[in-house]
Image (tube, rainbow, N blue to C red; front, side, top):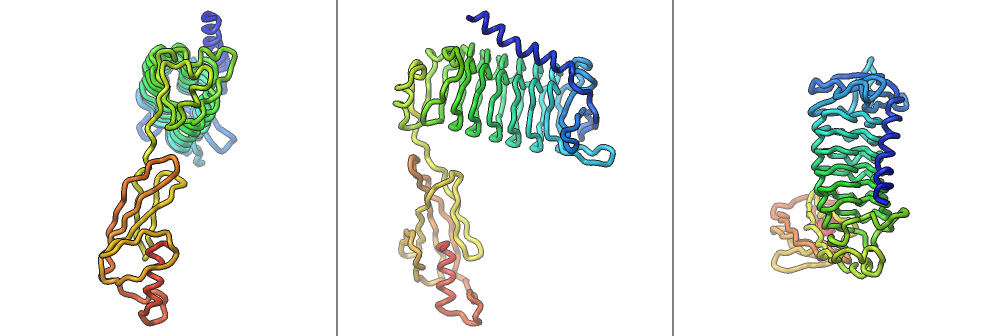
Length: 371
């Protein structure tokens, strides 16, 4: 079984190598702001993707090296093209140590950084939605990876054979981790799998012998896809599975997940402290987490904590303190935010009728209470 799996892990690399020899030659070359020449192919006639020099990724070994900054756009023959992709085997076999990927890039295709032995870090921007198979295959020095929130699938062998990769966080936008995605990442110690992941393929974390911490942010554990599901987390007998608060029984009742050394619940999450703003007579609240409600109070010799639509009557020649906290089911309440609203010098005709009256006071109060 083990020998058969090893053969399967090598076969896609061989096929990809053969495919790369038939790739198109570069059509555009341009020097970036750092003086590095980068090669491109056209996409759809209106966009560019980074490629290698010549007709084959093996025709110019180490064409790229050290630090490469990919520009957002390239002007060629009087026309400006956005750079939206990193093409097939674009940096494969090269000596790049780091690559800066702009927010215009939406796809990193198969084998784009395969066998980059000096690449140590990569930050995939939120604009990238497609991450191809073997994108970072066998990057032996790769230690740090940030996957942006646009990616929906971690493709097969995307990070296989990256032995120095120690931890990885899969964003909530990802729904599928394909087979062997992190195969033989022997240095991997911790993985956080976002709440959007519903399927994990066979061998996704196979031969990750030091993987001792697996965090699943989904309330119900993802399904395991493939014939040899026992190899998905091959070190699970020595690993702790962390699950959301109140969801321990969901994993304990499912075969395979119950085979982890232990299952622990994460602490109940706390909402971040909200922000309060007062501008143009309006009081507004905001929080990083969606779907929250706010409880607030206005203080000046009395307390008003309300969700009422009725304006409150109080004199305007004072300085007021506004406090608010955020609430949401399943979360601990946030800390209390506070701002000072100085109305001691407030003057004005709020309704524009030429006089200052109780009607103006009512309008301003309604604005303060954000009604």
